[in-house]
Length: 105
Image (cartoon, rainbow, N blue to C red; front, side, top):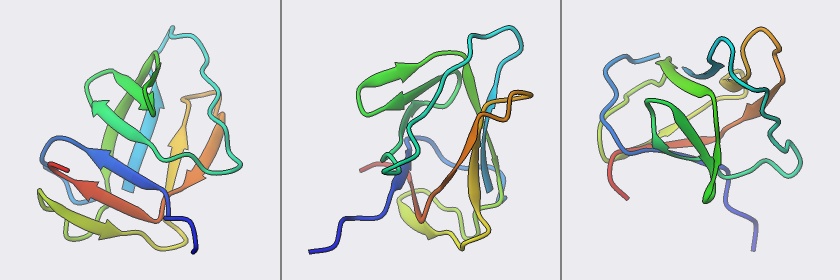
């Protein structure tokens, strides 16, 4: 069976319909994210802490920008041009995310 595509889980409603951008806070330590294979990201705290599984990545904040049809409790399908950017000025890397689930599991 094929592996499931990366799923980005946001436990809160989305106010803006636009791509998901993860930005590094000024002065925060640099965090590196593994790119291969692409991790399944679980954002349990959209106000400061990014979790890769159960491991928190400190110093990152999340801004939502372009997710079409973003509603609580449904999946949003991303196209090839929809990318999650990690890091701020450092522009550490970019992760392709194929599916975004908004709301409760």
